[in-house]
Image (cartoon, rainbow over the protein chains, first blue to last red):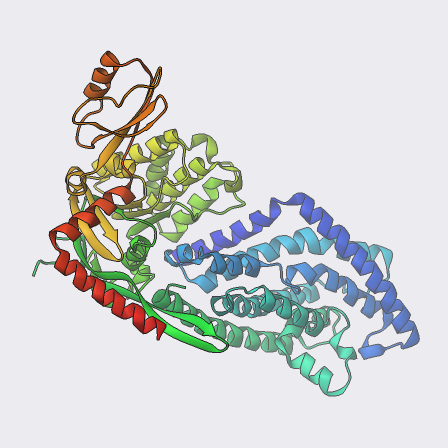
Length: 266
Length: 345
């Protein structure tokens, strides 16, 4: 398939672009590790006070912390993925060059972002998790099949995360400067993905809503698959439904944005 | 009616009107129209090399955008290779190449060759064809040592050559270049121009080039179109443009000492500043005999020749038009004035 090979090449390019910045990767691993340590000791204090908070024991809570640090950059929870570049291209008008290409914008950026995520999973995800497993007693599964299910949930979470950020980036067509929207989305991402505290901990309606929002696909749900706290198939269905809905919305917005450029000249 | 088969690119009374909203006060906005392209008609045959020139904001880029399908015309009919670009942008994209002097299609962080591999997939270029085209571009544009260099480390001239190669790997039938030599040094400019000439001669690629630099046109294009205020002012050979615009070149001479104005018809002195004098002479004349005559009769220290710039040529064309057909121009003036009052009210 010619098209498949094109997007595979785009993904490979995305992987290698990030692989070129080795010092940045090393610095990022260091930051994630330090941040993980701070969160880990906070969680230990919290779980000593309230054991079984949110249905996790302390080992599970600590595992959650280090999975969070491993996935923080992979999922671009706070932003920092492809969207900054897309927003910049829209702002400067370079997006016109992209429209000359016989490719689909959304698939193009999705492929590139998946390539980036693949690199960051290896380059920035593995090391903090390994560090956490050495220093703390974590509840990591020994069964490779559970890891495989986790990876599927991560992949689906990536697509959901991409779809959200794609929508946010396209706002730049109307807002001229999309950085505000990106920052707002980053804040939502941190809170509703469960990066600060597991969503299981949130009480009542807030918890219900937070768990139903798409951001839970980024961390909470993959983590629960790894921790054996969630039904994998139900998780995949939840993530798949959000991915499909958000990608479709992105497609509609993309069509509107293209029409705007094509008629109004941006 | 001339059939489309004959003309590769054809525009019939094409217009592009932008709606511009302007803030005039708190929550008060008014709309007015900007006519970026105003009823332009021309045709370009397969294999032609055409220069498209005009001052900033004349409508050059808008025309190119319509030709590539990323802008829809507000009126008129436009066809490239029989295709309506804005309706079938993606289909047309496989048959055209586009190079923007100030934008790049290359992957910033990765070696040049990675972007080319991507083009290979993007345009589904057959492997043998890709190899052949890449080798040819690498050789002619001298990219051999640059293929493994990340694009961000390339100089402007190198990046430009890289971008031109990227636009040609899929054998486009027409190549649009928007200011391809902007910011380049003399050697890089010459290289780009030579490459374009070869490309046209060997492959018969149709080339449409917008530029500010008259030398681009002189060295590359046989035909030139001048656009200003969205209207086509001139369409024909470059030599005739100079005649129409009565454009002049300027010879700047430095003499040993202050002297009265040099006498060397048909050149005439337009300015004197100490020992330096500026002489204007018709652009169609060669500078060599003039220089020889001056050198023989005057104590010459240094000299340089300045080419007429497009703005000057166009300004002259305007002046000519006003003289020749004052009435038509007046009517145009009234029209514009009317629009302006509308915008104010």
